[in-house]
Amino acid sequence: MAAPARQISSTFSQADWERIRAETFVDLVNYHTEVDSTNTRALELARIGAKSQAALILAERQSAGRGRGENRWWSPSGALTFSLLWTADALPLAPADWPRAALATGLAVSDAVKQFLDGEATQLKWPNDVYLRHRKLGGILVEGASANPGVLVIGIGLNVNNSTAELPPPLADTAISLNAAVGRDLARADLLIAVLQALQSRLSQLATGDPRWLDDWRKQCLLTGRTVQVATHAGVLSGVCRGVDDDGALLLATDQGPQRCLSGVVNHFGE
Ligand code: BTN
Image (cartoon, rainbow, N blue to C red):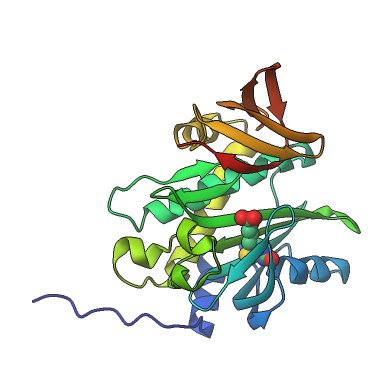
């Protein structure tokens, strides 16, 4: 007899928060039905001196979700929307490694998502967007707290049980939800726990100089070999992507010769 279909709850419960604390490194769960931005909330908690070493700020919805650069991030009900607030004592990384933590986080999200796919590959768009079927599944915003240099905030937004058709154009045509890919809703607590566990493992590879995380990242690089346009603080660069350097910089072959981008937003990339 087939196993009964599992009931998927549309909101997180206290039992979920307890599981998260028991099965991951998170020592505090700060839960909101709606918040402006979980990253902004995390930075506020850092400013007022939260005692936690690894707090999870989790929201059902965001009213003013922030993306990289000037972008907004839409987080309707059913999406997975959270930030981690990490103190330097709890995060096993030297501050010099923090820029690469953004890349390692994208890889960890990809690792976790793959546990829910039937062998299908995900791709990573530098620095840390997670793609599936060439559409954006999730985004990551890593921020330091200027008032509190020992603190790192990692914000993650994933389209899980929300319909991307409701997103404003052009996102409706460029985004994808996990439930659309697998044909059923998923238990977001299971996915969240998988992301947190993968994050711990990938960040510890980064911290110990284990090269596997970067090898795995490069295998999933969506941009390698494609023509890309990157908005950097020094202007827009165009060229063919030659992969990612050991320090996380995007490598470009441009008409003016090789270029390295340590930060920036990829606005366009070719087929
Ligand atoms: C991007 O793709 O530009 C990054 C998107 C990051 C979105 C997440 S959702 C949770 C956290 N809170 C925010 O306001 N942004 C991040």
